[in-house]
Image (cartoon, rainbow, N blue to C red):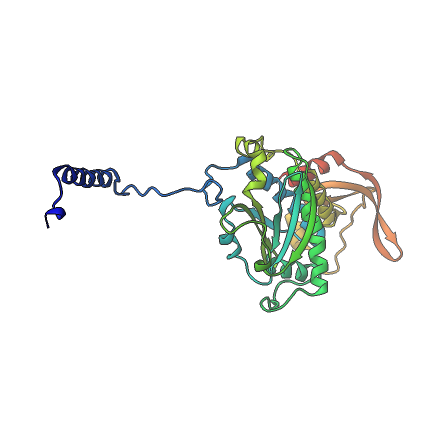
Amino acid sequence: MVKDVLSQDEVDALLQGLSGEDAAAEEVPADSSGVRPYDLASQDRIVRGRMPTLEVINERFARLWRVGLFNFLRRSSEISVASVRLMKYSEFIRTLVVPSNLNLVQLKPLRGTALFIFDPRLIFSVVDNYFGGDGRFQARIEGRDFTPLEQRIISRMLDMVFKEYKIAWNPVLPLEIEVTRSEVNPQFVNIATPTEVVIVSTFDVEIEGGGGSLHICIPYSMIEPIRDQMTTGMTTDRNEVDHRWMQALQSEMREAEVEMRVELLQRSILVRELLQMRVGDVLPVDMPETVVARVDGIPVLAGEFGQHDDHMALKVRQRLMPEVVKERSSLALAR
């Protein structure tokens, strides 16, 4: 039993060991600040700040695409640009429906793959308007693939979008756009990891009888090499004249119907004479040599009144004030 008794040195050593453990325990503070480990290789991050340059590009693209749709459908459309959104790729994919037209696209020289997505409502509205419909009969969307006819219209729409998108980007970075493949189910498309941040631009289209949206999804990693250009902004061309839109509007105005009036003669009579006139009375008049044709009260033509092929006719001798007509047309276009 005597051998089991500890010496004073051994007891002191044990006490020092216990006090050291307590000190070590005291040195580990409780994690009350909410700090947690961060993996620098992870894409789970928040990207702050606006991208004014991309917003200008989107506005320019919307105007160009509006003209392209007008020429394609021969009907006016309204295209509004939603704000640029930064979100996780998994969150964006969950917002898409089946079927959607998802096109995996390379935007060279940017590295990576982007998505150009037509939602089904837009596709069916465009197809309906293209063949003369007015949107009264809604096609069933869910549970089917696109028909060969719809795929043909999609292909033409995609060519138009790529053309206008390249023009919109040209002042910032000339792009070459190449389609890798197309899908209808968002689950089969993986251009980024679920936690990677993507830039989503949405364009809402309103046409007769319906409409839909175009989404352009670009991984943030594609834009990083030109991030400074995206955040510093560029001069907007909001006040620049859209010549193609003007030409399209002028073309439509040329097909508009106007009412032309020709005043053959004027004669002044007394009120007493007017009150005394009866059926069968003859009112002598002198036919003028030249009569004037007016549109909306504006004199446009002067000529001779007569007959042609058993029809009353006007033979044009002179165009009146063409500069006034041109000026009025320009003012109408400016409105």
